[in-house]
Image 1: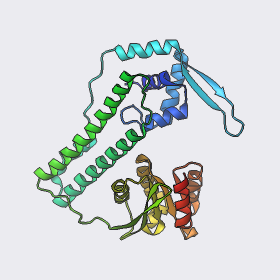
Image 2: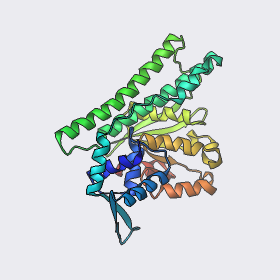
Image 3: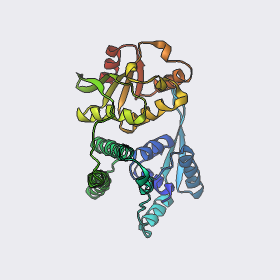
Image 4: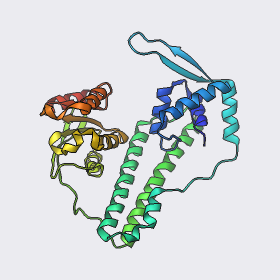
Length: 306
């Protein structure tokens, strides 16, 4: 499926900027995107050349100008023609299945780690999609039939994740590999209620969180308490988190973003924030998903009011 038609579909609902389109496609569980922003802007150029969309520059006094895209009548006709064209068959290529095909070479602990990691990722993705559905993110409901179709699409996505979760658990059972807590790192946390917001506060982990897989346990704590806010003390993180060269910060923070967790880091020792990490956190302060504070009280106030 060409991303061009996904863009035409979204623009048939309302006019959007390139950034809006990127955010919707990025968050969607079924729209195509390679993860490259250039793919979206290249598609918009092609749609403009075909005459299927137009754009208009909207100037703003206190912010950069925005370029807003709108579908044309020709674009609507092209979208309808594509919707009526013969559908493509679903793809079942899955890199995890390829890895599993050669997993007989692994020991039991290694195989257990492979299955556990995949199970956790599917579990988190299912929880993230359920949360998106609850918030009604870009779910078109202009007519009762359209609302029904979008509900069925999201329901199908959830059904596939649930089926995958059931399958991996059944696979573990058939192989006689029991899920266990061996090797999992204890995470110490508390739950705070403030201004009708539930906040999970992770004070420490022993040993500290050293991999993206370890961070999944923080997200599971949020899922357990239906919390959309998270505070993590620096003491719960390994030193590698604060060294961007390791890639650990990016891996962990992306997991938080995928689950739409608003996160505050409590860093009392300012010497941890230096070089590229300082630049990363300064950039994050322009958004509304991650901030750094010197105390838990400051972190709670930000999360509770936002």
